[in-house]
Image (cartoon, rainbow, N blue to C red; front, side):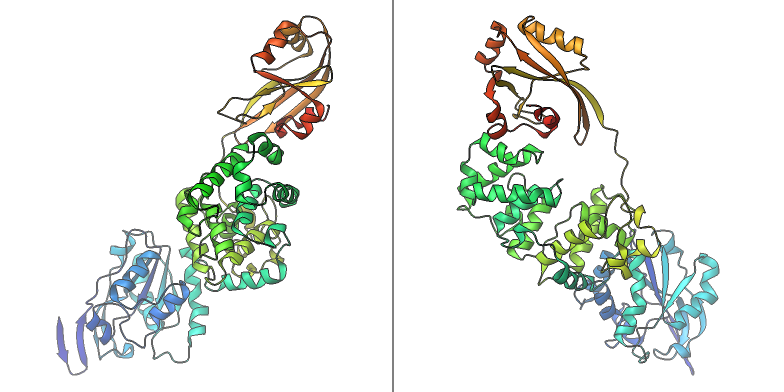
Length: 522
């Protein structure tokens, strides 16, 4: 192991490389110090700033033990080793090193997807260039030494130079959460649900905001709170009244889930939303995003609220090449949100991210980078590739369905039909409609099969409505019955259809927005 001579000792490197199959970068020192050799682990001297630097850069707690330090590196995909396999050295002095035998890095490079190699200090970089670079074919980046001997470089300078390792690691820079919250203090949008962020207010607003513009939600939110000021009133409301309150927001299963959750809250939680993320998540219709929003905004718990806006912002900040609709990538980005979240202001941080994504880091076009508080740290912006992110799997083309829609009037009243209990727009009222392309001739044949020739008909033109996976291409016809046939009467008696006043269509029955182009003709 050791061979003493007058100038020092010839020593074999006593510490195995630290890496795993997910390591993305490799940090190389020169040769372990005496303290590191005694501890049988890297950077063991208490004055060496490596572990303090790592904890600061990675926004994690300082690792005290060897096990904690190894876990920190594995968790953040960092490999650690040294350039020298054996040498003659006096104590811990890099300047005394001679008779160098370099380490064979193939054990790491052939078993881990290393993207970048960094050298901790000038000596490590010197030995890498001299002995190893020609073998690996990879250039190494020289970083200032974390050794206490490098007294000219304080911790702030180390952080400034070493923060570049975060780029290939896809790690958000430490401190950017505080920067964003300070920006939010002066730029927050004034929204009605923010003036009194009770758990109920946060819950309802967040469900309404899914797939709907903020400006459109404001009037719905105010009307809702006038009608249903608390969870008890929500749990007790009639279903048709509830659907009418929601009419125009779409995705009606959401409002059914809201009521179901309200009933559960009344029965199990005394009418108050629980201040517990997992319990919130157990409520019907509350997913990870909504549970995170309620937890952080209403209860000040350090939970992430990751939606499309947040995924877009962080995919650009990190230049994340993974597809954001893959669960692994989403989890990685969520981890980065939590990493930089100021623990004392989690709700403000999440709302600041929402505002940043909605007003600055825009989708479908050039973001307003010059107004962004994170402009200087955004990797997509530095590469002038903002519009390349986020990466997404290409969606399958939507299925197109053709329909004939019939607005049928009898003595000033309108026929409505209730959709099935399951499927698209389940249990909502609609104008009678039928699959297929309907010409005027085909529409006449349809109505005459119900009511003979006693009617008047004219075209209402075409309409289109886009759902997530299907498009309805509709042709509408207004039909005024002159005589009511027995078959049409039976449709009502059998409760397949109902006949309601035009005022009730407007004020009582919720008609999906898919039919809005035809409802206007009433």
